[in-house]
Image (tube, rainbow, N blue to C red; front, side):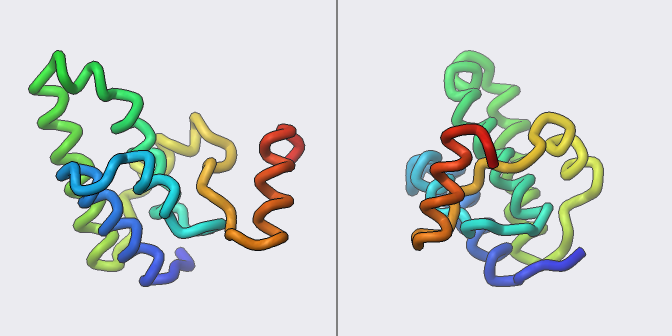
Amino acid sequence: MNFNYQERLLASELVRKALIGYIPVREALLNFPPDTKDKSVQAAFHALVHLEADEDLRKRDLAYKEVQDEYLEMISQILESGEDLPDNIIKNYEKYYKEPNIPHAKNASGNIKSFLRYLNIE
């Protein structure tokens, strides 16, 4: 799999910071490597989306919270080591998302891509 180690390192750091509450999950998502094609980084992005979406469930079910925390920590450690996430993790997210909603680069090209995504014609 083709990847950029710096993207994986940044994604790992963002996952870990969001997990410990150092930064809000939304901030972590907005700061993910823009326009990444790395399937492992994309899967980590989706895992963080689920962390944010599960906020209420995590408060009610401490066992669920613990399992999700361990899962995200594992993802962070794998990315930090520069390895690919296991195929089953990547495929699990790919079946729900055709393309990740990872932010685009903050330039003219990225703005056009974001606008097209907004119009749902990307």
